[in-house]
Length: 243
Image (tube, rainbow, N blue to C red):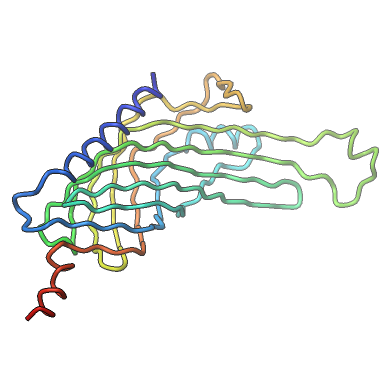
């Protein structure tokens, strides 16, 4: 069911963007087309205090996910319709003499928005789309710096790893400036399709009675390189040369 919902949302976004690109906008005197390779910088607002309290009770370090996360993606501008795709994956690692931890955040987003400003160099746009995210926690106990072969294998080291992922409806608003470069600010609110839960192993075995996870907001700054132009702007040099 979850995969069907995701596929439906993506299909609607692609169909809407294609349809609008084929339909002239009465408020525009000419067509506008732009594209940018982007690097999104995302700040998720995640409340995992319940999990960290439980980890502390068992004597394990907290899950401190990266505050600022980096990724790559693509943004298209087609007659006031703005399509954005991005993939983000960032890990934060800590190490001591006795253990090491790794907390990883990742997200995949696809959205479409409509520019409310007629000047295509500047955009303010509400958007809707799909956003899936995940958190991973990894704990490894280290062996003593000086040990022999037999002691190393006779004293098993503590190892814990679990993860959580969730699909969401992504609603938000963005503001951007685009020329040969792109600067884009976005703020989003997530409506989950499912409850958050922690899982283990590659086959996603669920950890029953696991602490909750609250993630509904995020902010992002996107920078990119590309270009945007209108038909009138593209034809202007031809008109001037004819004169």
